[in-house]
Image 1 (cartoon, helix red, strand yellow):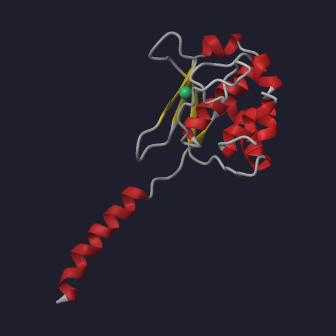
Image 2: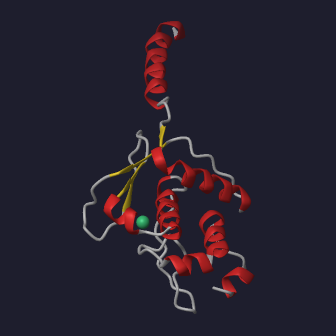
Image 3: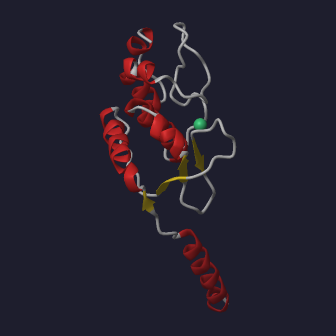
Length: 160
Ligand SMILES: [Zn+2]
């Protein structure tokens, strides 16, 4: 009896396997150096990440105040969209911070973290608002540890 049932089941299993076996797409264009740095920093912070399925491109935002956005849909390659006009006015620190924030969503699948440290600066680059480039640079080691390890060590957090 099993032999007669197994063919349709096998076909269903094959169809399911095919729909799940989506080929990853890596299309990050001129943003490649930031993706490489993201991988390097993830390794340095003890949580190695390899970015294999991601699209980064310039495009329009839903609201004018947005600089970047991460689009996550099941069964599709995550897409980061960056507003070009804003990107061109940003310094290197802010560009890295913006892309790392969006990769935090699109690669690490992190959500926003809004709390503020005792010194009045955001506790995470997963803050919904962009942190000033100078603040990011001053606390870069802390922010990168927090981004990848989720929780920064006490001694780093104390200095924030
Ligand atoms: Zn965000």
